[in-house]
Image 1 (spheres, rainbow, N blue to C red):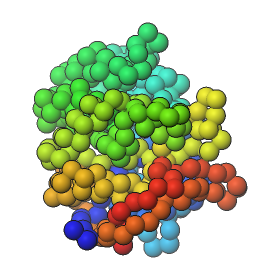
Image 2: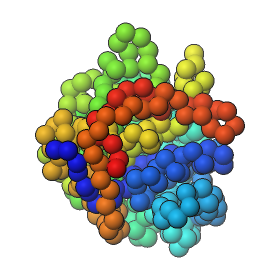
Image 3: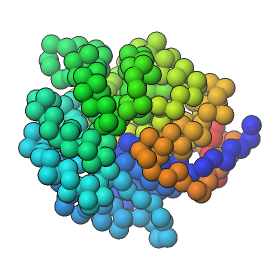
Image 4: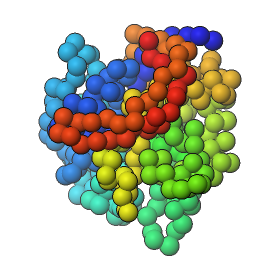
Length: 343
Ligand code: NCD
Ligand code: ZN
Ligand code: ZN
């Protein structure tokens, strides 16, 4: 296969960050995606309709000339979020709310401490048709970091999905066979995003031969049997799984650090890397549904009508991206050769 044309894809999990960074991140995503679910973990977080709409306007202002790219906005749930916040957000066009257990990941300190206290908010989301997006990891210090996703399923995810059958839940950036099987084994109200890094890599790629900070993201890469299960479920083509890059830029010096932060900046290579995965799996016929159909179908949004074309052509991911203010970032797969290129 020398080229593939597919319905224009969307990115159902993305971090743009804010202000000056938008000049870098918005064009990077808009080069191939029509829409993206914009994560709300800014400092301070996007916790209400007004903040979400102001953020949306900043993103739109950073689009390349003529771009129709559409940011899909989300709210960051806290223990102060009220059902009235949900209704106001829905009216303003917010499509989903993000649940971060406090301390689970980058900029999640202000997030949710007692998930059960949010039940009135979940009820309102169910009524208003606002989706619940979950970073599914427990944060208790006694739980091993490699077990945190599985324990979250057992302690919270299973209960939320059962208690709110009309609430659409996206299990974000799944990393384990347990999560894939949980999603497959439950009803139509649960789906999941999968990142390129969790399909391409396992924890050996993080730790063997030296610590590789640019492969460090949360949830952390797992053992290869989990990676294999994620690859299997996308190759099988279940409609419950869709593209969410979790592209999450951080400055080079903050990742190459004694306490390096979590996140892979994949926007410049994500669609190409997914193409590589589906080709490796002999499942190119499942790529379009994963990238461009399962996501909008689950969200209840129209599928895009445009197309993109990828061609079989080698190119190298740049070693560095430098922002206008001089900040350097190392993109995901920096310096490596990819086989697919956006035409
Ligand atoms: C994300 C970030 O940097 O904002 N980091 C990550 O490792 N994925 C946060 C997140 O998605 O959990
Ligand atoms: Zn997350
Ligand atoms: Zn994320």
